[in-house]
Amino acid sequence: MRVLILGGDGYLGWPTAMAFSKKIYDVMVVDNYLRRDLSRKHDVEPLWSVPNLLERVRIWQELAGQTIHARIGDCCEYPFLSAIFKEFQPEVVIHYAEQPSAPYSMLNHESARITLNNNLQSTLNIAWAIHEHVPDCHIVKLGTMGVYGTPNIDIEEGWIDIEHKGRKDRFLFPRQASSLYHTTKIQDTDMLWFYTRTWGLRVTDLQQGPVYGLETNETVLDERLGTIFNYDELFGTVINRFVVQAIAGHPLTVYGKGGQTRGYINIKDTIACVELAMLNPSAAGELNIYNQVTETFSVNQLAERVVKVGNERGHAAQIKSIENPRVEKEEHYYNPTYSGLKDLGLEPHYLTDEVLNRMFEVVEKYQHDIQQHKIFRGIKW
Image 1 (spheres, rainbow, N blue to C red):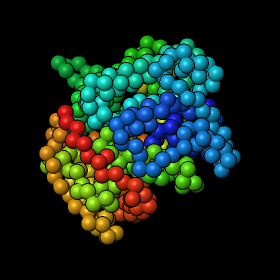
Image 2 (spheres, rainbow, N blue to C red):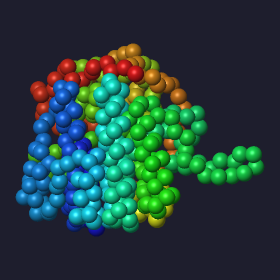
Image 3 (cartoon, helix red, strand yellow):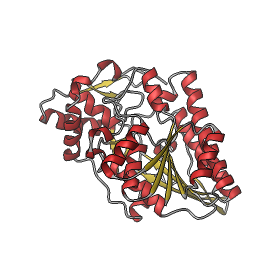
Image 4 (cartoon, rainbow, N blue to C red):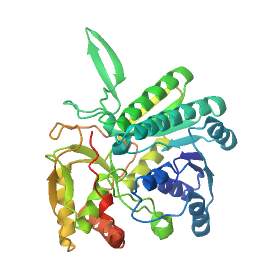
């Protein structure tokens, strides 16, 4: 199977590329280094450096004996992306090629513009490239559970059946984003649903919760194959950030009451979910939506678990509740459905003390490289 991974240099994209290459898929990765450039611009580079994408591909070839094709370019430039689709003729495209940070999207007007333009233009270009060159290609797009917000009803997997004045129909589940980034993910789904109905595209939309973890079966082969690991407020996810804060002696940054509850997923399960979606493609004219999480936690629960493991390892970890810089509910109902991917065969990795201990073990090797000023900036919206 020819698999095109857009955003193949990223935290999720590069591990996915290696995992699929190892399984003898024909893999091509595309990236324009947006995340690297933004991290450098805002002085929030990852905890450790990783080689550029072309060098990563060469290292993988050397160690694994498998070829990953790589192209450096911008998915928002349609002539470039169109040529990629025409050349490679992918059977499935994994769409990671978006600005991935809610805090960054709310930083200022420039960050909002970049987020809006990048995320929507890349999605539009993918739809058109498939329509023009490979109409049977299956789109697997990474969405976010953040599109749903925190409604006071159970969150279904993308769709909801409504009865109104004696009549019934099926609609996309109501969405209420909490940042511009999440809003672009809503617009992605709406755009792809439109082109699915209009052109008969095949689309699977994976509404993913925050990801945690540092390692996959492939990244451990050589430290040069490691994925990008941010621990800052802009691009770091909450569990990854908490582990670094505990090691650095920085109080864990719990916003407000800490009752904010979300669904979480291990990076290994992200790769597994994407492959399951790829191997169970949507039919022509069909939009499948899965909620890609494996368990739910409040921020307080996460902080307490990280502090427990951190203190057992000799760190003076502590929790500090700070004024919430975000407009969000700090106590709320949250009950998402997430059975679809398990029904397809997902065997989840859960957040155990063993998993946290391994994360601590890896980060401790780089603890002298942690820069305190990167941890918290107080971005407000």
